[in-house]
Structure formats: structure tokens, C-alpha cells
Image 1: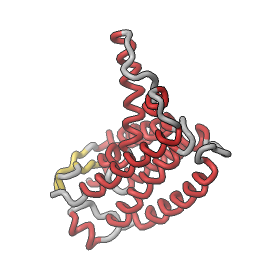
Image 2: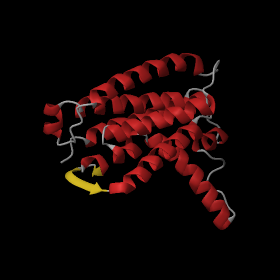
Image 3: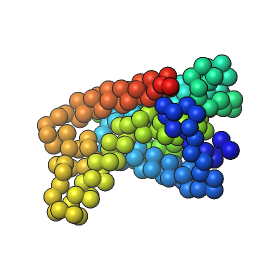
Image 4: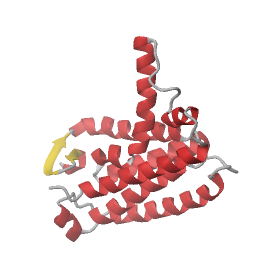
Length: 206
């Protein structure tokens, strides 16, 4: 049953059936992604800019998997209803750009926990509904780095009493190295874009 199976990126006909455990997998994806975006929301424009890039990538994926001809050519799971997800992604993209106009440095408005958690949940949901769940760590690679830096920092301090980074999440580490807020944000956007492009490139892998 493809509805409760997870495809492995790069292995077009390999699916891992999770059965009833897919419910827990869904919860893990949405909760993890929500918290990852929330942790990233520490600098003006950083979380929303990176989210826009991830949403754009998944909107493109949604369009691809909604077309039988492209799905067949790329050997990806055909999800006809994903065309509606493309519309959702486009709307989210437009809303994100409108918000970024006022959230770029120096920010006039802030999304807060409500915005970051819901935005992360939306990206996780797009990953689930396009049946490209395991592509999420690559599409949203910048969020994985941010959340991972927190996990590593806490684990290292508890086990050894030493910190790996000057401060976590990762963007604060670079701030303490002397990077300006704008430089950190712009460079993280570039990294997010590279992750998104790489994830789209994996769709061609056989």
C-alpha cells in the first residue's frame, strides 16, 4: 500500500512499508519540521526566507508528481491530487514574500512561535502529501543543520561538559564569530537554495 509506504530517494522502485507505524512517522515529520523552523527563527528574515525556498522546491515537486507523464519519466510516485498542493505552495510562497518585505533587517514584524511552528508543519505536510518524505532533510537542509546544531550542542555539553559551538542554533555561532546579521541571513539563504536545487536534482537519479 503506497499510502503507508515510504519511497527511498534514488531507488525508484524501492518502498519501505510502514503500515500502522506510518502514523507515528507522520507525527515525527511534522513535529520535527515545526521545531526546526522555530529554532531557525532567530534572525530577521532567516526563517521565512529559508522557508520560501523549501516551499518553492516542494511546490515544484508537487507539480511534477501531479503529472502522469513527468512522474513516469522520472520514475516517481504519481500523486494526481498534488496539483492542489501546488496551488497551496504558490499561495504560501506569495504570503511568505509579502511577510519577508516587512521581516527583512531591520524587521518591522515578527512571525513568533505561531508562525514558525505552522510554517514548519506546512512544509512537513507538503513532504508527506507529495510522497517525497525522505527528501525533506535535503529540501529543508538548512533547518536540519540548525536543529542538528542544537542537538549536538546539548549532547556534547551533557556528555563532556564542553560545547561544540560558541552558541546554538548555528546562526548564533556565526554571529559570535563576527558575521553581521545580514551576512548570516544571506549566506544561509544561499545554502538553503543549494540544498533545494540538489533535492530537485535527485529526482533524476535512477
